[in-house]
Length: 454
Ligand SMILES: [Ca+2]
Image (cartoon, rainbow, N blue to C red; front, side, top):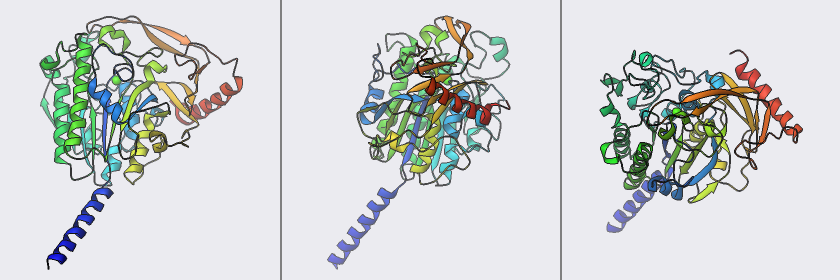
């Protein structure tokens, strides 16, 4: 009898462990707002410590050439969640209050994962529409706590308070407005609240697959951090805010470890676009050309760390190139499902996992700013072709939260060799006419497909 019991017990144990092994992976996306490529020590030496993001990089792979297709909030977020170019969805720039956002016909990652019974939550800034049918709870998220749009769309806006004071900056908690009009004291809690919600969500859902999307409203201006972090970096408020985000990353990573979920969870850490350089010491750092709201790498190239111990190597730096539109289909494939509609991204798991024979998934990637389609780069990230376009550049940045001065410049048809000239300094179009002409062909195709009727 005892023997039979033991046999039953061990069969039960085997069955349990098989079930655990078969459990679909969890996904955590931490998407910052306007954080620069160089804001975290693991990417570029900083004057303040960022131990938790550095640790995440040690536990996963750090990607040094990762792109978003448009370096503005709503466009970048809609592209991440839908796997589509802004030209396809029509979500460009930053949507203000009463903004339509991402049309429901473009499924979000959360909606795709819902087909596989994932628990889903979004904490932080949404910015993909604040209409009843475009809010997070209508877009596949079981839970949402945070803001519908940017934290500067309020009455204390530094350059246009008259325009923005027409709209209250509301704080939403699972479909209800719990703070009718945010005060500065409330903004101090943004990072902490999103983190606490995220940690609780992980514990509550440890027994089922989940998708957690943490989009901190920071370090977008106006900058705020909780009192515990005020002055902590000794490098000004931007450093303090970044250190609080770093703490948040550590708390989320630890919560996954504490719940035994580390091995089977993919954590993706990145930023929606580069620094808002006109804000001077309230903006982040990038070594690349220009900044947010441009098609130069200072705008569209974001820091990226992916930790997923069961598939992604630890302590590795990768130069493999891909774009945020590829995250949606890759997650879908890992969850053993597929996108619900036609999308532009592709499953790039082999690139993420540094498989030896991994090849670029696309012939080209396209980039744009607002309604301006600005060019393409080769799928391997080597060559970048700018079509002729205007762009803005901060010529007199302001400090301490005041808005700086910008000027408009223009660039002619230009080809940059991103391997040997990552700062986009030398136009080599005359040296490599065949490469330029091939990229022009892709640009023309992309324009015809997505931008000709706009
Ligand atoms: Ca942003």
